[in-house]
Image 1 (cartoon, rainbow, N blue to C red):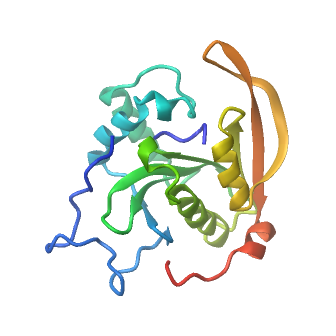
Image 2 (spheres, rainbow, N blue to C red; image 1 turned 90 degrees about the vertical axis):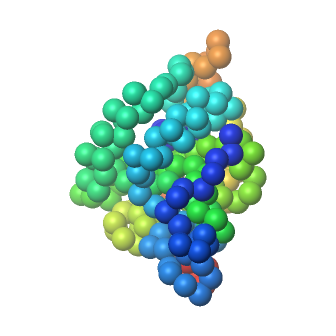
Length: 214
């Protein structure tokens, strides 16, 4: 979660002419999806949404951010993200299948296809959207992409010690605690431990199964 860049917001305007969702039951099938969400590429129109998400302290405190950011900075990040996307990183917007509303962001970064490794970051933008299963579904979708399409062998992430809720989600989808970086983060006037977690291809394969909701 700390490495991802991520007010309830309106759905994006890329909808069917009749106002229905992009991927209705029995209709179009998203390329990356699991359960209640699908993953799509980020667009420039998402930038104001990202700014709103990442300037909310409740969201920003679990990310690698320690000061407010504005539209200009986010536009620069967006250009860098576009340059790296599909090379050594992949960034996606998490959207609800029911109405296409964006609820967060998820990414693979530091992708090394030679060693088959990558780091993962995720954030749900609006705290009101946490606890709905969107994060778990997005993680399962991205793990399927990383292991099933990129042929990765290992995906890791870091989680702060003051975010036990996120750690529980990671454990639930198969991540294993590998070690603790003691007092590796300074936040809000004190040092915190950072926990390193990872999941391997065979661990993912042992728990994954074809899903009719993809």
